[in-house]
Image (cartoon, rainbow over all chains, first blue to last red):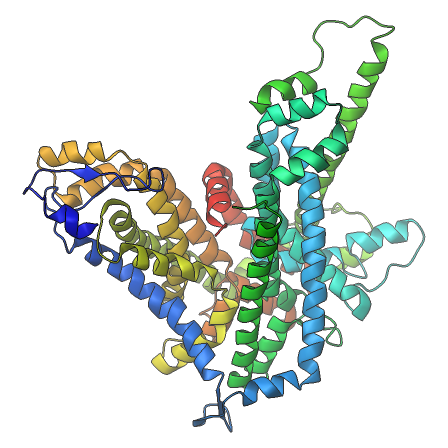
Amino acid sequence: MTVASSGTRRGQVQRWRRRKKPGASGPRWDTGLAGQSKLAPYLFSTPAIIMIAALLAYPVIYGLYKSFFRSDFFGGPEEFVGFQNYSEMFHDPAFWDALNKTAIFVLGCVVLGLGLGLLFAFALNRVVRQLRFLRSVTIAPYIISNVAAAVMFKLLFNSDFGLLNRTIAFFGFDGPAWLADPNLAMGVVIFCQVWTDLPLTILLLLAGLQTIDTSYQDAARVDGATGWKQAWHISIPLISPQIVISVVWMSYSTLTGLGVVLALTGGGPLKATQTLPMEMYSTAFTDLEMNQALAIASFILVLNAILTLLYVGLARRYGTVE
Amino acid sequence: MTVDTQVATTAPPKTPTVRGWTGWPRFKRVIRQILLWIPLILLMLWTLVPFFITVMISLKTRGEVFGSTSVLPNDPSLDAYREVIERPGFRGAFVNSVLVGIGTTFLTLALATPAAYAFARFNFRGRHLLLLFTLLPRLVPSLGLMIPLYQLAVTLGALDKRLTLIVVYTGMLLPLAVWLLVGFIQQIPPSLEEAASVDGAGMWARIRYIVMPLSLPALITIGVLSFREAWNEFTLVLVLTTSPGKRTLPYELYLMQGIQGIQNYPAEAAFTVLTILPFILVYSRIEKYIVAGITTGSVK
């Protein structure tokens, strides 16, 4: 493509060509505008590419590579041990426990997040005049730090003075110690994680709903479908790409999410909220076993990739996503 | 297109309706309105109650938090805020957060703009491959970077430096920034640049006076998202800083929960409010850019 067009280059005469696939991207020049050299695109993109290579690509590969090594003590010389870190990881009950907790956490977040997301997106889609205001309020949890959200939820769920237990006490009951009870802490963590992630889910689903052509709904109405039926048979299938994207994004965010769990419970009480990212963090920075922690990190990255492919594959199989 | 039908269903009837046989549909419509507003009220409560409670607790005294059952403070005081601001930990972290935020924003824009221009406007060998290489790392979660970046920072002696945080955050933001900007620059008609070129404007002049002003919305979006990332990021600052005075606000807030013997809840709440307030204030002015950025940017 480049070679063929550069043959017809005529000095400073500017010229642009459309790409072969129309609509795939805008027009571009080869060379030929004033002050433009063939090297320019490389010079322009190099700094960004170097940064991405050094800070994203290299660390991931480095981490993967180092997960096959081990040192006897922190900072000591490393030797190649093959898959030993992985085989030990798979024989470690703590790992399976953490995987269990992660499954509950991810599943809980995705189910709760998608349910609430759909409910709120459908409700917002019916609003016209106050939409801007409602939408900007909705986003608020998304633009604050995970740590700030965790502190707010700690205050909300405090067993002595939290709003929840005060409300329960108002009705004459004793509220539980939410964050100290191993059975309840996971619920609070899921709640908080969903709270921080929900705005994006709502926006994605809402964007999908707003692109639906009203003629579908009109046709459905003519056929006598109303309310729930219309939502279930028309709107939800039509926004299934957005639903898949939301699910992918939420499971990515929860599977690799450390901030909320660390700041809210730190994995406790009694390891009740010790998800895989927490297990990785404590292996690396409490036990100081970096290489073992890198094995866990690599496992999380692979699991994340598999899950993403799975969702997209499922969605494609049922013919809803391009 | 959706507007027409919705106005019809939401707008109250202007002309007085005849009572009698029209009563039932009207009643149904009222019920539908109520059913519609229940989830919206729920949404507002869900979103705002944690903020509200935190602000209220920050205005109480330590004794009042436990003693009084009222949500509202009896005698609102700003003592907790004064206490937080007087802490050296807070002031240092605030300055760090501001500097890292500004640094990240500018570095991201400075690196993303030329790269996006190259990808949007040039047909060069390896373009597709390089673009893929630029965008694909967007999928790397920061969790996978924590340990490798920590080890690299230790090796390079780069721990506890603001510049390290700026560079790392910029690296994390660049895929998204380039992605947003390429799409935007491609929509600027190239004829504008051709005309300027005829008038003798070189490439730098065209970028400076045509491309950048016209892609200002995208640049603002990227700037806001960059600042937000630097301001809120927690897991990487957690491993890349070790000593007091080098941390940013989220890390300092995280530490604050553990340090005190007896928990000082109003101060904790005040710290939280002071951490989120600056960005909320900025946010209210530039909300539409954020909406555009997070809906197009977060996907893929």
